Image 1: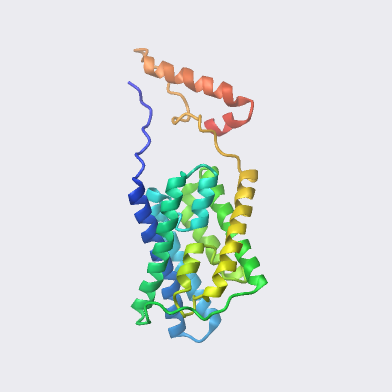
Image 2 (image 1 turned 90 degrees about the horizontal axis):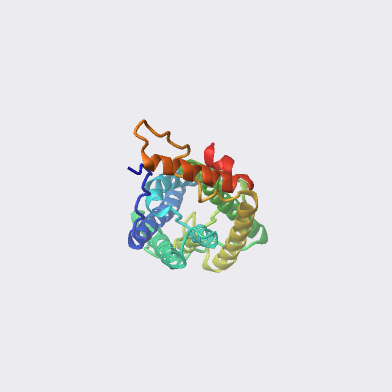
Amino acid sequence: MNRRQEAPARASLTRRACCEALGTAALAAVVVGSGIQAAVLTDDVALRLLANALATVLGLGVLIALFGPISGAHLNPVVSLAARLTGDLPGRDLAAYAVAQVAGALGGAVLANAMFAHPLVTWSTQDRSAPHLWLGELVATTGLVLLVLALGRTGRDRLAPAAIASFIGAAYWFTSSTAFANPAVTLGRALTDTFAGIAPASVPPFVAAQLVGAAIGLGLAVTLFARPSPACPVRLRPQRTDDSGDQADVDDHAEYLDQRLRHHDDGRDAECVR
């Protein structure tokens, strides 16, 4: 009897795209809605930003934990693009993810406006056009993409909800742009003339900076973090044969040893057996 573990079936593209749409809509609603609420409660800009950042950190962590097992919880076109360029997401899936993310972000911003009795769509008048802000977006997106890819390449995906949310929370404060770092949500925030809004004319430079940052983050991740060997056996160590001489176990043991020999020279053997 072969005791190898079977990989879980991947969800259909429709289900995954729906998760991306719902997740990005919720993220946009959290960002815009918490900004509106903060502006109602205080005139202190620092407290507004703190409330906005805290709500985003908590909401993002929950959304990654909720949708991650189904779609990967990209919730961001640059993350999906990076996954496509590293071979982790097919081209057809990238198109579906991007459309779902943009549609979700637009819908989430409209929902946030509606929840606070604002007009459903009001173009933002908050100008964010300045080189130092573009640099802030580049830095934030570089760090985000590097973190996401590094977690995946080192087998620490389970840390994604806490790690990614924590990074975004920190980037709210250490970048001049408050870390939009997401083209879809950036578009959604143009639909609200509130604390979290961005004027439509400021959107293209922000998205351009995000794309450049994503490229830098991708380059750093590929350079610094080697992809784990796909040939590592599912069972990290071989099973011993029992007294009955189970042939399947003998075959498994032989295959395991063969894989160790083939990957020993390039250092991947250590990754397989640790």
